[in-house]
Image (cartoon, rainbow, N blue to C red):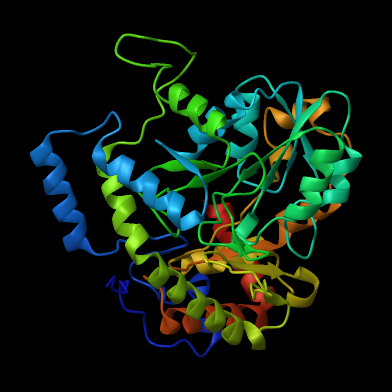
Length: 417
């Protein structure tokens, strides 16, 4: 069984604003508390797999552990095919190329930049759509309003492990004869309508980066029920080789290594434990922040036929109610050793090269703009427990109780740096 890994002990409980690190107090955490400290799983089992692969001396090129990982993922997700890749960005690029996408693809701007880069890298224009302010996922009405005769696909995102509106997006894709691809980097283990994420659209791309709920050190995979598409992607991830010295397709080097598959298999065996810890942590965060006015933890409770992985604890900061901005609260937490993240700031449409490309921005994105100023992602995973969570909430509560002093201290610190 995977164990819960603890970070260094917290300092004595803070009861006064004077004890905040930003006001000269001792940081609460001697060892930084990251948003995504890796979940390790059963180390003994991992090391046994690594010894076995070293004994075989088969380190890459579709080794037995990669094959086993793909097969077990396919069974877990309930899909026909899984193609493992060296990372999710390359997985997206291969899926985009294998689907034959061209021209323009509609994508949310409130996402990690790799979602758009995978398109732009292949000279496909990402056209940015706004999101639903309640779920943070792409708004289907905004998507449909952006469809033109140059649109070849929709690239949606299951953000924070909350499933995107799959039925409505499928309806739009069918109605306009578009391909439908999902960035499922956040969504391993997530279900909607009684089906696991992995089998929606033409394909779905998962990330197994070290910080994800299931990790393979570094890695990704494309899941699909389309056998011909899977065959093309297998060719493309291995330089287009269709046999020894027989190149039959354009390709790249997107293969997963055996050592990454060893970690992936070990993580897969412990993923239910990871999700259970995440869910407990999410519930504790909601309780702890219940008394902090203006800082709301995004509800991740699932309805009938749905499941979440609770991997991301997302708070929205109402600066008018709090008296401090999201960035000021982030600075307070950073000083305490809590390395909260401002995902996704700015929205991708405000990053280069996209902010300089008129074709990427066809309409205002008010919800994306607002969320990019409000969202704060807090530490989670097996390295985090109730004591950490209560300490984090107490820090924020003390800060919002003295907003003027804290604001001045944060400004002074920023000026000094």
